Amino acid sequence: MAVEYDEIGIWSEVKLAIIREYASAYSRILESQRGKSLPKLRWLYVDAYAGPGFHLSRTTKEMVDGSPQIALKTIPPFSEYHFIDADPKRAEQLRGIAGTREDVYIYGADCNQILLDKVFPRAKYSDYHRALCLLDPYNINLKWEVIETAGKMESVEIFLNFMIMDINRNVLTKNPDKAIQSKKEQLTRLWGDESWIAAAYDTTGNLFGDPEKVSNERFEAAWRERLKTKAGFKFVSKPMPMKTKTNSVIYYLYFASQKEAGMDVVTDIFNKYRRKQGL
Image (cartoon, rainbow, N blue to C red; front, side, top):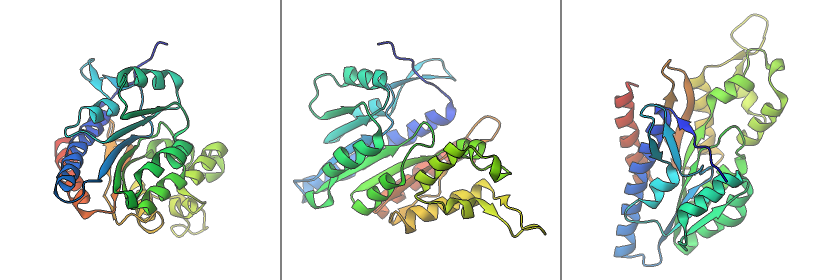
């Protein structure tokens, strides 16, 4: 089956560079812990929207490694790799990349159930298993249950793409009555309930009590707080805004963890790329 590779912009290349740096640091830290006192320690790389493994750079017109290839090339290696993509062509491409490796698991299905039923149970804290999970959805189709489960497990760290441009375009319209109903339902599934409405609209700024859309920054801050108070992550980064050349935010990239050490590493990486992007 022929696979069409995504053409990615500079923001996606920045995201991949961030994943590459943190995956390497994460694996080195866990390798050192296993060598010292935790011989049973295992760590998983989990990619919920893995894609075909490669992308075409819009900037250079060259093929670049996607997140699965980055993970497979990380040294020291992860104990297991779990790549999920609902597109059967992409899943088949990933199987070709994995070859006969027994430490790589490929799933051609909706990640929401695969993560809950098959992958997260392999990352139990009590088993001395840990996981780094990339949640980088193509649109608003991730379920809150996945995020909350990861937070409650205490063994899973996540990078999370919060697709603010898609949300603004299809849900957070100036007139809430004009929002696309199916997209509103998707946002409710992502948020976990309809409290996103109160977070997205303010009725105190005008004489008539009409709802007014809040800023991107205010809405993302409400989402970040939810990751802490509802999902239970102890540490949630200030997100990295991924922007177009015209300075529009496409999505916010968050990191969430139970470990301060991971937060410190990601903060340094985010700050480096913020400086490079002039943010």
